[in-house]
Image 1 (cartoon, rainbow, N blue to C red):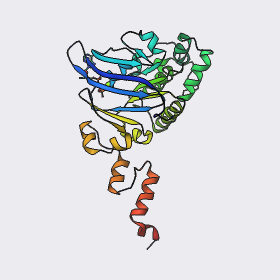
Image 2 (image 1 turned 90 degrees about the vertical axis):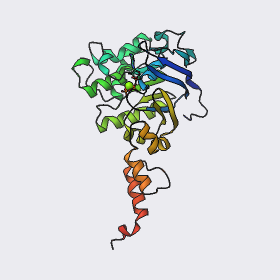
Image 3 (image 1 turned 30 degrees about the vertical axis):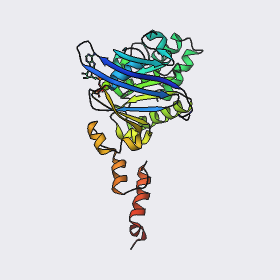
Length: 279
Ligand SMILES: Nc1ncnc2c1ncn2[C@@H]1O[C@H](COP(=O)(O)OP(=O)(O)OP(=O)(O)O)[C@@H](O)[C@H]1O
Ligand SMILES: [Mg+2]
């Protein structure tokens, strides 16, 4: 889905958040996210990413400013009403899992929101996260990476319009990162907006989302990942380094962003054609 024509599903208008202890976690944040858009939040520890995500399903309310989700002002709508629209995957999955089995865990949302065939929806969500065969397992008996994927399945099984994920690739092997990447692309095509907080710049480079850089509760930059993540000075302010393919592209003076190792090989061949001639 093309972001330009789609309507806004998340709107932050001059949002500030101050925790009871006095720490100022969001400072004048304004942004708008459209149907089908994929948005990454990057920034150092403590820069406000989790705080921002928790505003999307109304777990936290703005101290100042307004957050609107699916047209609802989060200060007026109940968390129950908002969560029909928003699946939120927590940074630590254990705090989210409570059911007796993985299937029951993923069926909770579909039952709660009266989706037809809740067990079928739950089984499909488990399958999308590579958890077929785990239906009867106790969530607490799963490995860390499996628990994270179960919490993604359980937060997406009823078909929310917005999926907010906190560090979804932590603990995932390459195969499961690629599975997640495929799932995000499918959601996007179905008009579902995904917002993820992540330090995993290599993953984000492949995903190619819109990237928002946060520092000390403020939005420092907002643009295509290929531009934002390859900006060395900006990444340093986010306590990150550009992805390796971005650095390689710069070294090779590639005319456009290098998206894969194979594109890097092609760029290298252009840079040094004599190497390919066998002389
Ligand atoms: N419950 C809380 N009470 C008081 N202060 C908090 C609370 N949660 C977070 N903070 C503070 O708010 C700021 C933003 O925290 P937040 O968790 O949003 O950061 P983050 O960008 O998600 O960091 P990380 O990369 O470590 O997950 C930090 O200074 C943090 O110490
Ligand atoms: Mg966080």
